[in-house]
Image (cartoon, rainbow, N blue to C red; front, side):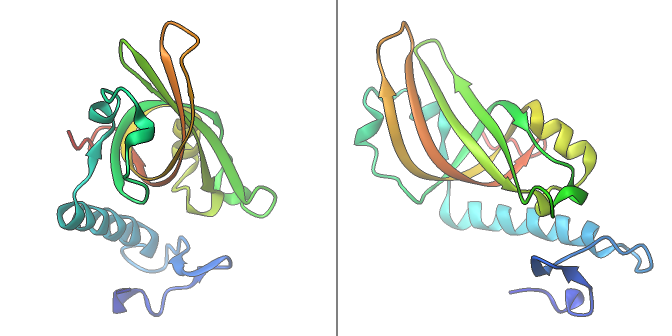
Length: 170
């Protein structure tokens, strides 16, 4: 389902379907591709729906959730070391920790992001330390710690799209 418009665009060495920035084409393919990806994510959300992380945080025993592989909308804090997109050869992966909490529970995960897909240097700085929202695919609930005043839930996921405000689902 890759639009024909992208067929003649030069792709990234790690992903030939992902256009590189080419200022000789108007509008630059990377800009168009970003918009196309956002539209595709919204289409998937409409077709499949999402669980809201804030609602999942209200469940007493998250181990009872049977939603592995499902889309989850989220809001929370990011904190990590996210490399600039042009550093993809030296650092193919970037990492940022994700935390979302309410009065009773803290949900934590580590997002691994392929550096080649980070949109810009500004985006990499924001992904390193910011408050964000977006969509991820929940893979598993890995650990539950009830030893502190707040329950800590560690989980694994695959981020699909991360943004700041415009992506807010709930």
